[in-house]
Length: 298
Image (cartoon, rainbow, N blue to C red; front, side, top):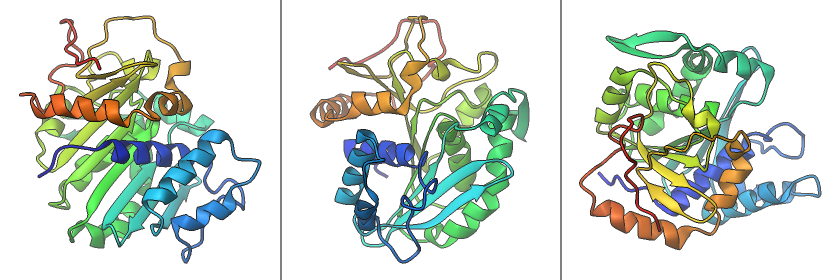
């Protein structure tokens, strides 16, 4: 299976992860079940900022005939999830919103770990909030798990953490490759979780971090990152970056900052992929070690 994720795939994931923060919050920015993504063009007005407008333009450029087949909005746990299907390009995208409310923060702060499987412990808050909509997600996408579709799972912040948990659960339901693209993800589970997750053959996870994003450093004790680490700064992109500068910044967690540092970087990213294809390592072997970072700077 192809374990390379393209620039367009990453940038589309970023655009959808950004747009879900505002989707369905007004009567203008919402589609009915008969409309396609191209119809998002008609929702744009002066209330949309430049990031939202550009994200919509990019989305409809690549997936004009896609449909939002389900927007899940659980009022009890305040988790939102959008499910987009493009039957022409045979793709399914699951987008989970990041932290955007007081309820979200309560789940974020539940650092206690819950037993997922033998020896595998993960963040209780991330897991419990996700499970409040898991059955609805599974019911919605079940038929696509059984046919040959490209499946993407993405999110920013809290949504990034839950994307990893969701992909772990879905990997048992399908043989399709699950492409997981996360932005600003906190750590999700213990070392057994990391090892198990990275051994699953039908998951490929690109974990994108931006500059000194403080959220990517937490939780601290008995928590580990997963996936191939793509690190972006104002000027460069790094692969398998192990940052040892501990001056972290809250503003670097903003999804608009991620957008600024990914926008227009396709050629730079493609050069990065050429290095990756010649690399012997398929994932970030120990992103929490004290060893010097291994990176490719472009």
